[in-house]
Image (cartoon, rainbow, N blue to C red; front, top):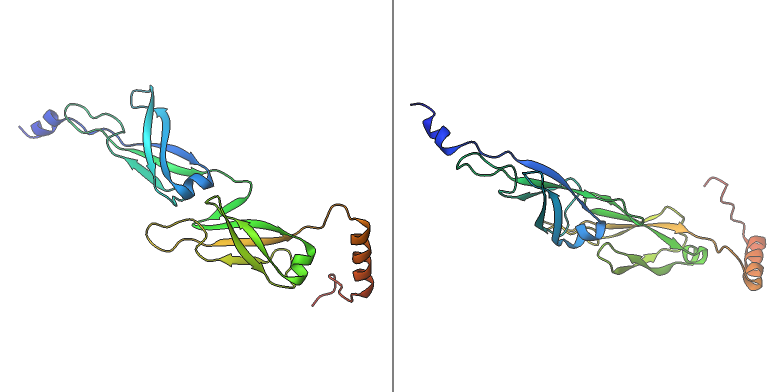
Length: 191
């Protein structure tokens, strides 16, 4: 008498979880992805997944009714795909903020310059390097980080890395020697 309704309806299917590896660019843009995973019966199965723009590492995407099968008339469980953003050779993520190293020439750091900065969306932004900048200085580009569908976009932080030319022409060498002879700057002296 008691519990007869539950027996007739069956037991709902179990929720399942799998990982969804994405590149930084894929996480930035979002879009439809086809993923092949082991289905509830253990056989390979293709799933069409709508990835929202700006997903973050660890975020879960729910595919309703794609989990374990229920018994009897009970509903199937859900499949949750946990986003795993893969390491990138250029970009490092910190939540919705993106960090990127930007190489600059010694004269750009000393005199100031406007340089291009790659963005995770595949384009470039421009950043103004203030005169007298050192390696490691971080410049913030507001709103150029990962998109946020529920609020403000993350920021892009360009970390300057001064790169010295690997070889010098005769005139370049003369100019550097002249600078060395006339400058009183000593980077090893504390300020």
